[in-house]
Length: 410
Image 1 (cartoon, rainbow, N blue to C red):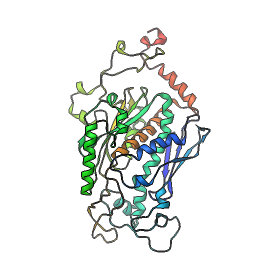
Image 2 (tube, helix red, strand yellow; image 1 turned 60 degrees about the vertical axis):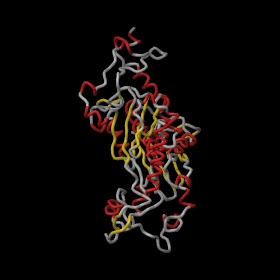
Image 3 (cartoon, helix red, strand yellow; image 1 turned 60 degrees about the horizontal axis):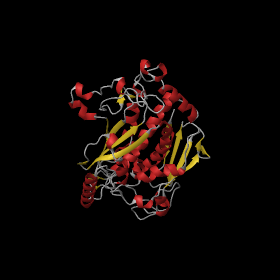
Image 4 (cartoon, rainbow, N blue to C red; image 1 turned 135 degrees about the horizontal axis):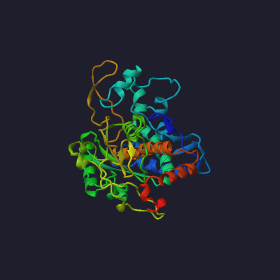
């Protein structure tokens, strides 16, 4: 079973992630993880924190000579702001977030922020300082998730699985609808808001500037596309074995995500059945690879399902989107109440982004990689990546129609 845990607070000493279940023999390096961590820190509209941190995941265990050992993989990401910066009260973070009891007052946060974890968390844990809640509920934790996702991406690479993301909407500015196979991914990575359309990118930048001037924040929608997945990953047998369940949980667990859809998503509710389903091509239209095997068995004419049927992959590109609400911490705070008295107060403001939707796409890639790696391991097993690959190849030789398969003279 593949699983991970993260630990750490936004302004604590650092973040820790432990990933268990990756087979031995997967090629991995700190530099490889750093690539995705750097992508998470980009995006127009990010706050001052991104100018302080240069996230680097230090591998603490589970890797030797550039390959995984099969044992738990532990990574550590330092929070530079902890040792160099000061909090909103002017005191060093080493004082505010000290593990030991400190002399002198530590200013509590009592002005609750609507939309953040402050209010339910403070009530649940019976604290009079919302910092006890906001430090862990901060999106800073997502850096550890991206490190985990980079490891899972390294595991998936030998199977030909690639995972990408792009922004399709920020603040109501929508990019033109584009089929996944037509997205210019180089343009996405070059865009300041990770959008494939130049005109939409410019309009989004203008919308972010306008939001900053108003002291507010913006949400949006990102899309994740995974290609190269074999048919039949996941299961229909039980609700918790469906890949759609794992993906929904993984993406839905992200900060500020309020909705997840696959393929046509909610728009499919408006279509008649004859337009919604993905018709299967006859075998004479299938393509073979260089080895004579089917390049993609059971291909479809459309992909309204987003690559999932019955909780299993269809072999078409996996396409999912997530709606991200605007960030709760805003330059121009909302009216709120005091945690101690319940009386009227302005919500707390601490350095924050105007939008982090572009970064959410990278985090979404990581969570998708984790869910897909887990499903691949459930299907193919293996204590070493060579064994997993052998099982995958043997399976792929069986998934086409028997009468038309290369092994039977078809």
